[in-house]
Length: 110
Image 1 (cartoon, rainbow, N blue to C red):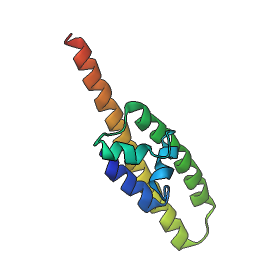
Image 2 (image 1 turned 30 degrees about the horizontal axis):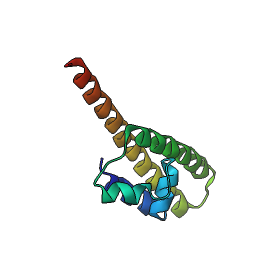
Image 3 (image 1 turned 60 degrees about the vertical axis):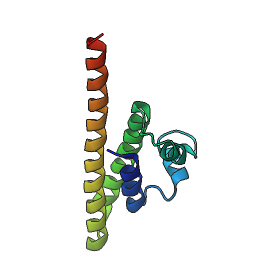
């Protein structure tokens, strides 16, 4: 999953409003995202794990808000956001697994 797509999804969900917010979300400096983009780098495995943890916390709180919501329109908005976050978590998990699998296969070939 590309860094730009991840940022775009989080921005559209309102989880981050700026690139600086993204840096905080992955437990890095405020300039982390812009620095990675300028250098054409992707998230490290640590960054992906930090992001996954942050999204899990947000998802948990969103699911609580969803269960307490009475307005049908707002409930639908929460449901959409929950679906997108779960999909993003799956993609992040796949990225972690892919990195670890590549790392394992490289070490195995040495």
